[in-house]
Image (cartoon, rainbow, N blue to C red; front, side, top):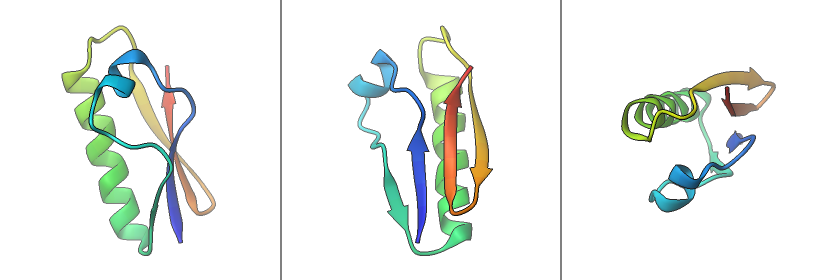
Length: 65
């Protein structure tokens, strides 16, 4: 099981329809979903923050920069 987690939820994230702490069966599926989320957050949110992705074991951590 692979998890996608955000280190911090900004206001834009809380107002979006995205979810934190997602669990998926496949590493490829989790990576694809995490990259999709990061790209969407960087392109569609207010641009006060930038987001990046880190892999830590079976967790993909989306960090606010």
